[in-house]
Length: 178
Length: 113
Image (cartoon, rainbow over all chains, first blue to last red; front, top):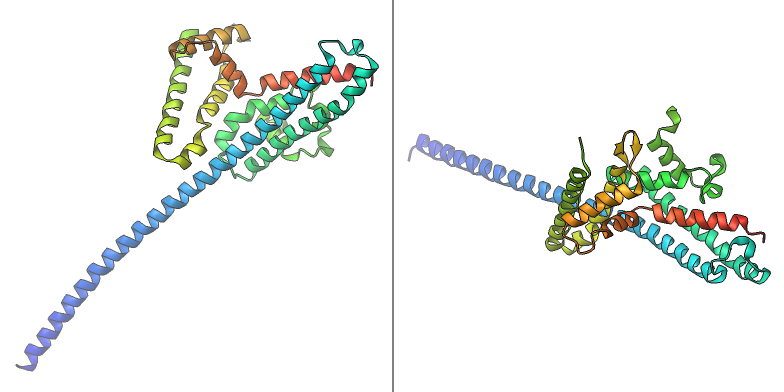
């Protein structure tokens, strides 16, 4: 076999190896792109799950605070028995005192749940569009009319501990631009 | 111009789609079900907000008018108690709770402890 023939065979083998290397590289690069796509998809699902769970949790916290308040209202009703405030006896008033304190603390709990929800909204830990659609009216209800049950807990704004709630209320109701 | 019936039709479709979505997700995955079980509640919240955009001669709809629309929605959904749609909507918002809290807040203010 001449040197030229051997060189030609070697060149041929090299070419085949190069082509095979190219085929493998394309195949693996496609596979790795697919894996990356799959990983992204999984990450997106995981993110959706986390967001969904966070939204469920905050709804549950609000609902639980509501239930606790409604329960204490029922207990208060058992004492007042449909009487007006002026018709209550001293004994009634004494019985009411601890329950009224609990009423206030449940209102605070209720507002705390919204505060937590608003913090998550501001930190974009939940779906912001969906949160706004679902809560714009509820949050407005907490602030308006200003003489409502929540007023003494929310005001004055400067010293209120419900900073996130105020921020979201102002953002959605565009109060800063009025 | 929108009529009570056309508004009711629109809301019926929204509720149906939301219910369909929820049931599809339920069959797809248990995890997704636990996340999205409140899809219907969210739709009701949205409807509760959307109805506030309608007015007659510049006046927002009264509660009786809203009840009328939601009764139509209940009928279109084929519910045995169509009036319950209105109550479901109230429950999906905090309107009732705020009214309750305001009532007791005023009551407490008037008590001389």
